[in-house]
Image (cartoon, rainbow over the protein chains, first blue to last red):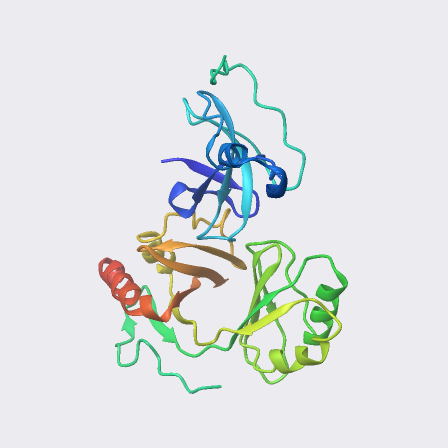
Length: 101
Length: 186
């Protein structure tokens, strides 16, 4: 089980959280997009093997959304940051193996 | 307020030398949401005549005229529960046109189970995955989480005295789980 550091409540078990997929996906203006661009925004994500910035919500605790870096291979957890703040740099060392790389 | 029947009515108070489990039904509770560090928060605190704990996970025992015991619980940066303060909603009503905040009377939402005694912490620890040791959960701490899969708020009110606030519909389930956990301390 993952131990997730909630920025408000501290380290808690994964069972207290819900996953919110990739963080930092910009919301485009739906009025100016084609259907395929909109579909791409809705459904296409980086899905990297390695570090991924993710959204999580601490539903059983403070109820707040926050973001963190997680390594999808090792489950190592990197920097945690709040929404609407600058995304910290991706933690180092692990090779990013995403699509097209 | 609608008179409410306790969800644990008729349950025996579990008494043992090491731990006493009892229900505190109908504790007056309000749910307060206000953006931290704003004028609204200062105005709310002033109207209530109490200081709101600033950090999630902290409880402040507050002195309220005519109340034997009142507490302000900080659950998230912008979320507080005020327990045992009958006049709270009335006192905040005059602020409603000038400030942005939300107050809801949630007295009927949960009931409170109190555990008291030298082994209260051990009994709770059977069902609670969070660290209850003194260094991480001293008296004056509050935490939300899942206890026997039921969403609860655990308060460390005073040394060897804990309160578990649980939704009414989960109360009987949790009561049985706690009584079962207390068995070995009898």
